[in-house]
Length: 117
Length: 115
Image 1 (cartoon, rainbow over the protein chains, first blue to last red):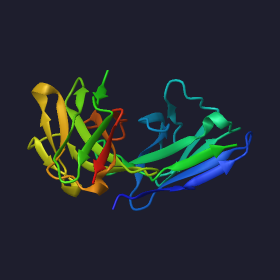
Image 2 (tube, chains in turn cyan, orange):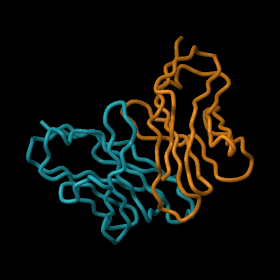
Image 3 (cartoon, each protein chain N blue to C red):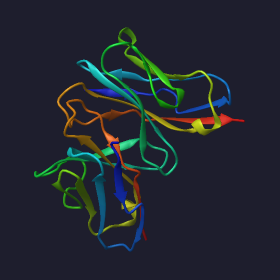
Image 4 (cartoon, helix red, strand yellow):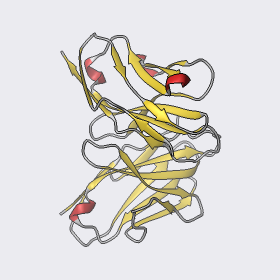
């Protein structure tokens, strides 16, 4: 149980285009989903917290107009990187916190490798 | 402010040897502590978690961790390392209750296993 998927697993795009990454909780409902960014050989950097049906809360320094997050249902959150540039190339990981838990356990997706040419 | 320190960036052990990965945390209330493992190009897998009860917790893949409140530590251990344990290990801390609160991660420890 508690499986989180991400799609796509890898994406290559041209500079200036937009890319959408999906995060799905497959066997549970998630009140809250989190989006992280990870640079090579570094820890996870939290970008934003999204709650179903409301606006995402972005961490300091994260451009909300560039990284659009939508959490339209209890099983799906999307991250759209708008007008992507090479510096946006990174490994993006989502996680989900089940509705049924009163603790802060998060289940992580397998990540999406974004390369912007 | 909460923080997590993993003092060892890299650790190399021989297969079959014992392992201890250190984690120290700073948190203003009762913490909920986690250890995650990440293989290259993959997401994070939960190894074990602790927020109450027996301070020695057992996890998957033969790992265990001991919570020591007096030392603000939550070190991860394994009696005999396998080559497949080579990966990045992250310690994380968050609030015990409330649901949906963000976690604070350490910088990670890269484990290499020599055959």
